[in-house]
Image (cartoon, rainbow, N blue to C red):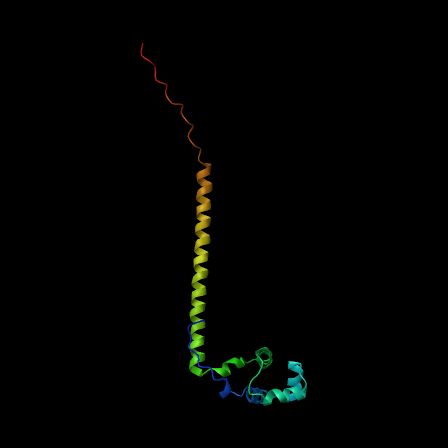
Length: 135
């Protein structure tokens, strides 16, 4: 979509172990984490054992842990490339916003000129001069 060339290696990532380590590093108990993601403790331990995970659940866990865990599937260079792409997109969005502002200002100027010119009285039509026939 952005012209990026990412090399996904989902089998090289054991997302369950990454989640477990992150939960532990944040000092969150398994019970508290289970409550945060609305899962039972047993299901949380099952998540920790899974090498892969449903994307909807990964989104939920990412929000709870305040870390985008999708970045675990790409290299650091790919993450930097992605960040640079976002920066370029933000620059483009800012430029588009500026263009829209300029177009709005031009339209307002045209409307003002149109209003001013409509106030100017138009000259009355002069009846054409009739030719007089020579006798």
